Image (cartoon, rainbow, N blue to C red):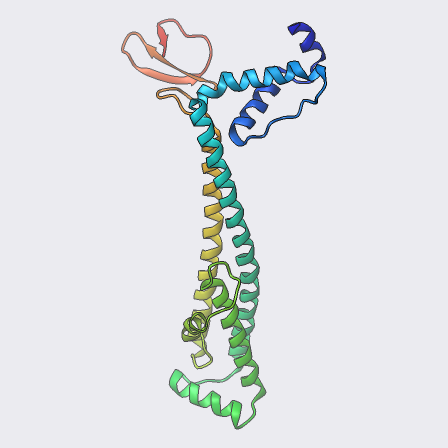
Length: 252
């Protein structure tokens, strides 16, 4: 019967083993169909699940791993969604900051922010300087978009006045040209830091998921495809590819 099944089944032993491990990791049960011809493959699958379950800590270990992976999958989806939003808003904020920096170079100011505040207000309100008005508008837009990225949990929702004021205290039209450039550079760096932190978190969750999906390591066991041997003459232990044990050595 085994020989006949091997002849007609599309699944070899490795395929059945892979499906069994996928089921243990995330409850992905394969569909073998409902006909009588599928019963042997279904039996082979469940037999393999029962055979390798001890590698994953038995029934309790399998259930714990499945629950852990479900939680990690939800966490990963949430982080990746937030990362996408932050990335989109960061790109908009970066463009607005570059526009504000460009206009800053076109608006003459003194070396004193206190004087600049009074001077620019007069040029905007009394002289009707269009360059000052455009610079002011660009800075306000850049402040709003940057604050959304840096001071919002997921870069969405209504931006609070406090969040906007925090960025406005750092970036405003009264700054000297040199100060404005340095602050813009710092804000670019802060947004980059937030983007990379989400990327690092995604990678950490993915690595944790891999560990949760794998079998329980056996203390002292080597990696798959390797073996550890001890030299009889001095007791020194070596680890290398699995294979025949050389003369004068014992396999551990």
